[in-house]
Length: 255
Length: 255
Image (cartoon, rainbow over all chains, first blue to last red; front, side):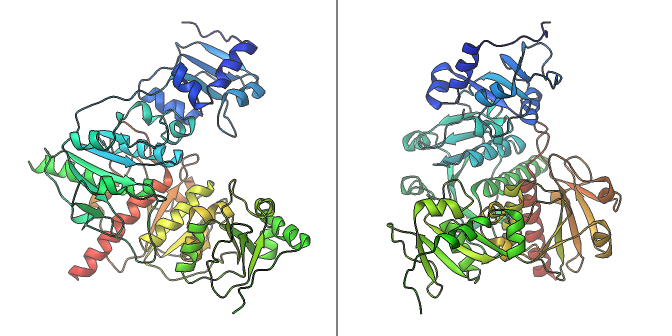
């Protein structure tokens, strides 16, 4: 076990700082993730980083036992971390990889451009066993440090894949639009355990695109007070995911 | 109707910029809110601002017909608005006022310090008819522009009040802790329509304080996959609020 702290060269700091740019991340296939809680959750998922970086002086205990540790200055921590107020903990990971999987239930995310929302939906998918996330073109990049932080590391747990309109069609699922005002009420929505559900969520700014809408006649809405026009997309995702999770468990129990 | 655009003096811009600081806001009891969608929702709630500010050059259409309009430069918009990328729309409002109301169902927010989370919970409360929000000492300030934006203006719709531990006790409600791991499962949770429920939500960083926990033996948890340790507090709030909303409607229908 090598847990002796070492220090990083100026050149190495520069290399790591370059990973803040999307193009460099995608080319190197590496990303620096910071935040104690996020790293703890990634560890909980059984994922190991390549290196871990701790703030010198504070001498915090490394999160992973068997991964090389480097102590760095607060100044350098700011250079390599994307967040405004980096914690004393950061680590270098391979970027999360898309993968095609079989699924019973997926969310199709139509042009979700806010990193906080995308990350939050990954975390919700992990919590409520959504089988996969399908990302339309123009969704924000999954390996963005903001997405990874908001996901609390769940980008490393929940399978995801890019899917344009023809790839979405080719999946041959039961496509249902999550719409604020149309379709059946969520609390009454039911499905067969063996069905392949694809719930479509659009962004607040853009809604669901007409190409995707044209693929289905089915919609569902979350019942709510008439005082409000719509919910944030990650809030809608959470309420729908929980409902499906409870329904699926009930279906399994009564089978 | 006076909708002729005017311009603001340098001194007036300075006065408005001072409102970015909490102390000045609380002293003047005024806040500048920016963002087209937030302002539209505030208008939908029937709330009027004192003045509205539009970006000169873009000549956007004022949101309110009968409220004085001032055109200001992009530079000045940045000075008076708190958000990083102000939209072309801002307006001056009295800060939201605490008020004591009778309620059937309240959330007690225990040391919620993240403005995005507090705002999001206000929006959820508006969507699912939570009667009031009770704020512990050390919650983030309701009149923070970040809270108002995240709430999509719902700080002007949902009644709220400060409540320390003895004020919470004095409300004599059925206090239930929202706990990630303890208590009864949310999907099985039921209540009588006439009951006065107070659901306690703690922050991720601090959890629920021991003083509040000691007031009750009741807890409820949101069922979820074991893959994940906890949910973001606004996500938990949404799932609980929706469940209560559906239960209450069902109870009312079957009465």
